[in-house]
Amino acid sequence: MASHRKPKQRSLTGGTAWTAAVALAGAAVTAVSGTGHAETRPTPAQVRAKVDQYQREAEEANEKYNGAKEKADQARQALDRLRDEAARGTARLNASRNALGAIATAQYRSGTVAPTLQLALSSSPEQFLRRASLADRANSRQAATVAGLSRQTRKLGRLRGEAQDKLDQLHGAQAALARHRGVARKKLAAAKALLDRLTSEQRRRYEAQEAREAREAREAREAREAEGAGAAPYATSGRAARAVSYAYGALGKPYVWGATGPQGYDCSGLTQAAWRAAGVALPRTTYTQINAGRRVSRTELIPGDLVFFYSGVSHVGLYIGGGRMIHAPRPGAPVRVAPIDQMPFAGATRPA
Image 1: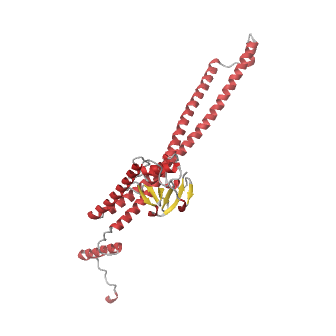
Image 2: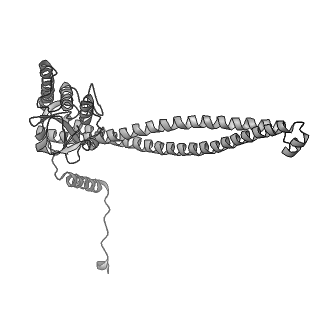
Image 3: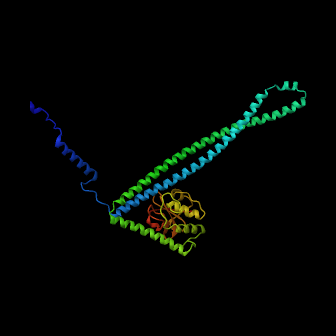
């Protein structure tokens, strides 16, 4: 009979349990990493490619931040105007109410006498009629004041409703600001973490290349300044020439997140500042600048045109001729001259 019984399950206790736990942990590590060996260190080329990707994604978040900031600034300005107008309307409304209150008080104190009785008691009917005519006009003015009060009250209510709408827009834009800023900071932190994994020698080479690119940008600007502030090479219009000349003057200046000059720039901040110097107001972001002007093909490019890159239109430069542009590349890299073939071309616009 004992032969039918189910064998007893052995519990894992003591050393047996510890051995099983270690085995399971090892299996989990292998499943996650795919191997039991330590993770290999990426090559400098792999690090640079990944860092470039993170910085490009950070710049895309920066452009979205710029757009949200523009909306927030516009909403704040509109809100301030509405609040000022509402304050003036409230003052006018209070003044009208006070005037009506004074009239009502005067009538109460003087008492009311029926017009027919006043005529009967008057020693001078002509004087009474003259006063009655004046009273009618006063009553008409009073009625107009009451109607004006009603209009002012309705307008004030409308202004307060519009102000609340703008306040809601402002709060929404501020939330977007914080969100896009957070994304950009995470991407830049990820890029820094990758750079920190380089060996000392690899890091030295990486930084030497960054320093060489910065020096070349400064030397190009100094050479341009030594030539004089004449018309930009290849430029075909006065405004375009001024925009290109401004961009040459920015060579070597740092990429600064969200900046529009004159000490530093992000990519769309540089193009906006360059065309502002030429008397043309461009919107703030790459997404809006690509629609500010006439679209042109790559074969039609002339100096001063805006050239855009990546499928998300997240980067922009100022074309200077010869297949080259001036742009603010990324954090840590100064404004420089670069070939437009360096990045995936997305389109071009001619502002003027």
